[in-house]
Length: 264
Ligand code: NAD
Image 1 (cartoon, protein in one colour):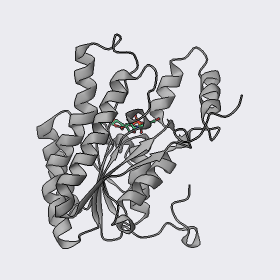
Image 2: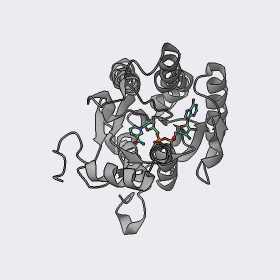
Image 3: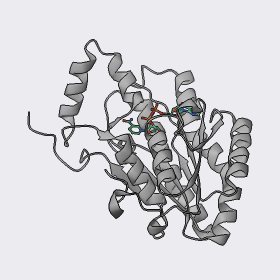
Image 4: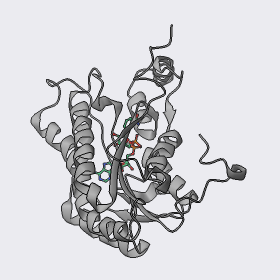
């Protein structure tokens, strides 16, 4: 999906705004950071490995499971950016298996990243978001990367799905809590997005190319969605034009939830 129609160039609708993207060192987060930058924002990337942050963004290193590190990294980013209007809470990890396959330690590890990681990031960023919202209400937002796993029963994804269900509930609760402060809170629900994460999963198969072809064939679109397509949805929810949108989950799943599978 192209970032915008005007003369083939992206719109400058984030001009004057500052954004922080967690997990922006790879995949959906990196695509989002690059798109926000192209649309005029100043952008910082928080990642446990920010080496893949797009050129032109400000990389800050933190693991979202470490509250003190997150606070320090968010403070550093806000200091460099000068303000914060757009927080994209995107860092997340996967887990495969039924409730019998993942033990309590694994549940704690994934929950700590996917759910509490967003909470730590939001806590650290809210003071700066509040300051920005006082000056520019409607322009300030938090967007989480959730998943269609939050609302669809996927096999072999008990822990991952439960964590994303919590992300959806957290998003709705935060939207209610911060409405009066002029901070909108939404999430995107990607289906299967072609990112390094999915590449790593496919690489575990005996025949990764055949597994990829089978995965693509299961998608209503006949292909996975791209990281750029998910980024475009995140940017649309975070853009000033979305000033009337809060407490919403936007599926970016190529029709997976709404359409029947393609006939074989
Ligand atoms: P990815 O592995 O390509 O990128 C994830 C990034 O997050 C990496 O840069 C990684 O270093 C960072 N990260 C992971 N754990 C971290 C931690 N503890 N602290 C700081 N940074 C950390 O994955 P992706 O596919 O781009 O996934 C991004 C988000 O999209 C995740 O929340 C994931 O659940 C969600 N999602 C992905 C898909 C998909 O099919 N790819 C589908 C639905 C939802």
